[in-house]
View (spheres, rainbow over the protein chains, first blue to last red):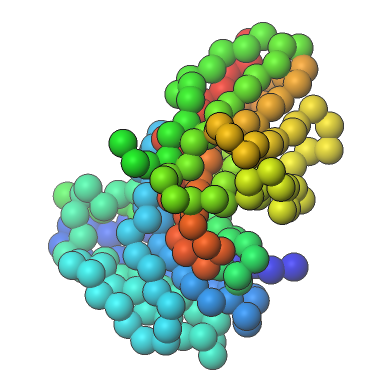
Length: 109
Length: 113
């Protein structure tokens, strides 16, 4: 069974802090990794893609991938109240994509 | 609009009726996925289709639910004889190749009276 696990949350951080979201996966053959943001009542929105080990930065977002540890994370620097949402980790093994259950983040002003 | 298009955005049905949900993938995408999401819960995979083929329907209930993606036209998720438990948001996503990210439509909110 291919699993994608996320820290259950909810996660609450003060405005301006770093929010750290974690995800582990079971399928060692996984090739591509994504983070989606979903606001309440809205559809998931792709915010980061990462395909190789290391860090990938995009503005205030940094995705980190460690294939040996089967671990992918998302860091949000200088968190803003507008970052409050559920963050979904998605892992693609080539023939399917599996989503984690999501971590709800609240950024308090 | 070149994004994934779903319609209707909201659908209300009475118990026992049929619900048809439509999804047009992004231009150039040939892979379509359907998900169901209950309030405050995660996405639940239902079915993965390519043109005229069902690739994986392991997440779809065996009865009352069916999906298609014809050569021409949108993908259709069909729910027959709806029950209250079918009330949910149904999202469609599309991708061009298997390892590319999925892009989601705005979803169809299905309510069963």
